[in-house]
Image (cartoon, rainbow, N blue to C red; front, side, top):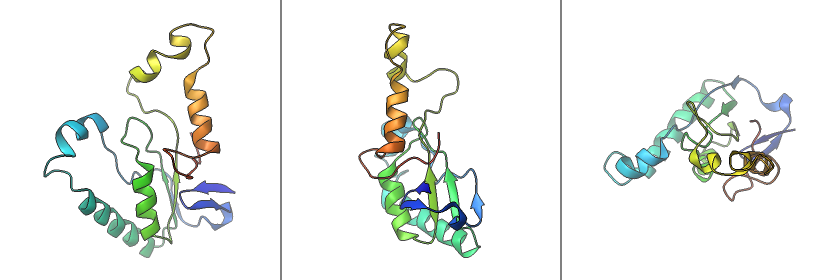
Length: 145
């Protein structure tokens, strides 16, 4: 079985799959500062637009998308869950991990072995939790790293 946003699915039931699709890519800090609270970001309109586009995708024969949106790209699993509930014929596989251009985010740079070599790597615990328990307080489990 493979984890999807709506729960485990037999790999044989994934159908036509697009292997690298982002429902949203957001720069969380920038959106928070300049986009989310302005006319540029209308949550309901953006969700409706995503639902419409994903319904078109399903109508074209696609049954699964693999969404590698992780920390650093504006990952918002409750939003993706809400969207997927409105497009029930689409499987969405989500990831755990950190997107970085060069260095790990400060959150990780000042924890674990970055501080003291004998401390455990905090990413391991967080990523395993995303895979085994769920992401961002949901039951949605990551399908890949």
